[in-house]
Length: 548
View (cartoon, rainbow, N blue to C red):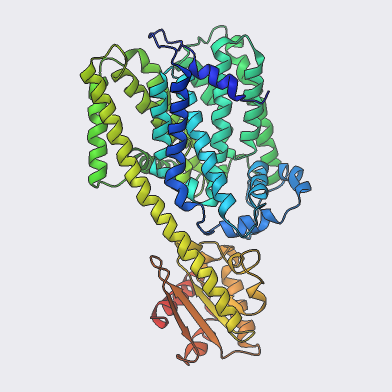
């Protein structure tokens, strides 16, 4: 059987809870209905993204990984999965995400469809895992566990992880992390079979080599045993022994990272103000998860009112679930966001796994308010409050997905227009590309090369852009100045094409030497700009002013 055989998991999902609260063994039809509802809620909002074009890092990631032979897979266990396409060697050992791009490129590396289908299915699978964790680890009834899965899949904070092809680098590790945790919780249910325990270890191995943020598993398991299962620390050997294989596997993984990159977990990024910055970042992430967007707008106010009302209704009846509430609340959140401290940048994707705790906390509160011993009025109130929360999230998710649709459409138009301009210009001309950063950050030169273009446009013309659009920011100053020098001394030093796109509509604004003869002089003057910030500012300003 597979590590998480569906029949075994479904059986665990249907059986009576262990909390002693009189949880009924729901009919299989209820379980199926819950699973279908979660899958529909995960898939339907993202159907419009299936044909969304590549954006940002997608170009470089897909170009590199789709070109690798299948025999390359073992090498990804002892080398960076991104080689040096960003101008440096990322400290990322990720063989399983790497092979996923090989799989989703089978439909054609230039087609985004299979890439998006894979992301959506992973998100739906994670929603099911969240419901299973809520059912098994938090002992919730099927309807309440379904609430956890539904809340998780419609959280607007997950849009980037699902709609952006490269976003799978957070949804994939979350899948294996949750599956490992679920297998461990199922083993703790009986401890009579080692299959669940061994499955948990195997899944944790995959999680580690999917993304480094999964190194927190030992803390997650130990906290679960103490706070939810109420395991005692004595005798210490018996308490510690289940975590030893997980700890050894984590240590071996960190040793590999140290041997390859000289650091175990980006500890070099921890400066004097790191703790203060981390606290502020975590606060923003939490607001983003809870309210859906982190802003104090009307929908957020409605959300807070519904949450407060639900909490008041649950007050006094949740004491028997205090351990689970604390575990899936502040403890799960803290463990889940801890890797953000060394991430080096901020992204909503970084709380994909941490948000699982928020979804389960809401489900625990819902379960206690709407339990079968509750009055009809209380049960209706709980259902109504949960419906409001879900409705607000769905509305905000729809808006967020539409924004990603726009970003992708602008990217598609920019790629088409840029290649057409490169073909139409005389050879060795200068083409200046000013695509919106939110569509093309880190996209060049890949976006104008195969498989996204019939031929490599950079071999026909000289292409420069603002710094944010290039793959290799550290080298951007020297490379841009060298490119300008080669163009100025080449056979076409008087031909310039400048392109700029509106970030909302994709409308193209252009300027050429034919209508603005001063273009060659202006761009030749940039060759000796000493500072990257000044050169970047000048290119942006010239694009803005000359392409009106």
